[in-house]
Image 1 (spheres, chains in turn green, cyan):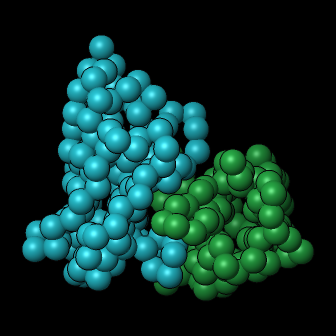
Image 2 (image 1 turned 90 degrees about the vertical axis):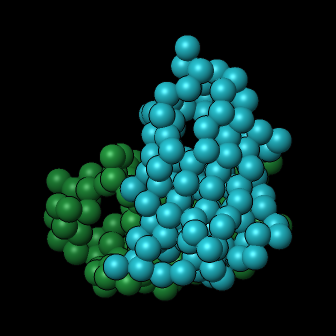
Image 3 (image 1 turned 120 degrees about the vertical axis):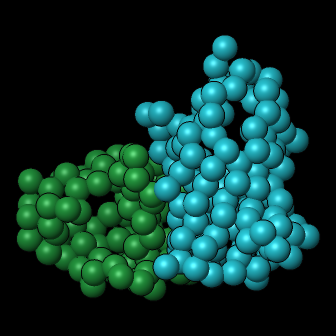
Length: 110
Length: 117
């Protein structure tokens, strides 16, 4: 069964740039998988940052951007802020009415 | 304001049932696909189920297939998740999410399900 892979953790300095990636265990990511990115802190509602590869959700700051880098989906935060410290999840549409989340990346801003 | 509000969670014994509700406000859920996603303690987000816009198609993750049923009542502007034969591993916070272009774009705050004797 195909798996979605994310870096378990990442660290970025305030004001710095970080790129989180999301891959597939046995395929290259393309826009056909409609990758989306969501921020989640336990105890709160998830927040959609990016959908359909690179469409920023309403109200999301433009320091967040989505892309395909090589064979992976990518979320780049340019000018990270303290409030960006959270967990980030990608999700792919696998076709046939099925979606799969990655395991999440815990981002530390320090 | 566009919102989704989940309810119906609680403490239930193994083998028991619960029905979760996802009530939409600020928009009509009619015409939208809707997902249920859960997060178990110490784990990440996991996609659970989806229903299409007219309710004619529903899909489920393997471990809940045959036990969970998603449905919708557009007149009530609500999507439901009927959960039967609950197991300890179903313990999680359950979120509903509105779908736009094959991805969730609006989420609820979640409702907690605890399966324990």
